[in-house]
Image (cartoon, rainbow, N blue to C red; front, side):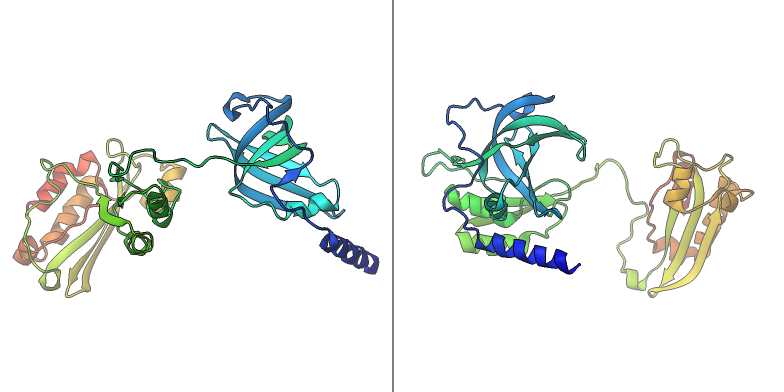
Length: 341
């Protein structure tokens, strides 16, 4: 054990004493400037030797017990992406590995092989050279620069890769005077946008991409503009056998009656759909076959629910808020009757 520790200490000391060359990254040999660069999307099978060029968007360095290091880079040329791997051959290369950062462009030479760990094609690099890459420019003449009016940030779930600060900084670099932020149904990026606009001298156009409903389809019945604080109302939820409104059957109706912010009555009934529940239904609703087997029918439960709602007489009728989560077509008629009380 002591010998292992001494060996690791010696190796670390040797690594610290290795000087890293200044200038652009060069691992292996310099790559010929005239080498034919392949587009990544054209590589679909193993190949003996290819030249690739791309942007490094992720870097990882692993150290093995032997002291040898493995550099793993994720590289894209924006037609596709590849994992590029290179093992260190000496202490100097191992030291250089630690200096590699994402955000650079590299030219790579090596074979494309099926990686047994990734179970996908990867490049085992012989040579890796850092190269310059011209940044994208806005060539529109001064006074005719565009302003982006539709923009999603990382505040739009699964619909963006950049923050509003990055967009605003880029807009300023291109000479844009203004930029909009229009995330999906939220305003969460507004504070960051305000700060980024002030920092970069770019005007922020505040907006959002909102979801709207069809004006001709009623979403509320017997509307009455009253304060919930003064109202007695029923909030109810349903569980069904499917996420489909066309094929799902009701299996539970639960409700609470509210007044002055307090629950004054509760309603909960299971419904026997007449067939076994699927594992997916049980997983989503936590309702089992044992819970619904032998329960009341849908018609009877909806009748009882209507009676529960009628219990407040005219106060409930005139001052009600009913939240509908899901109702299958078989219950639509009953629901309209309920809502028209």
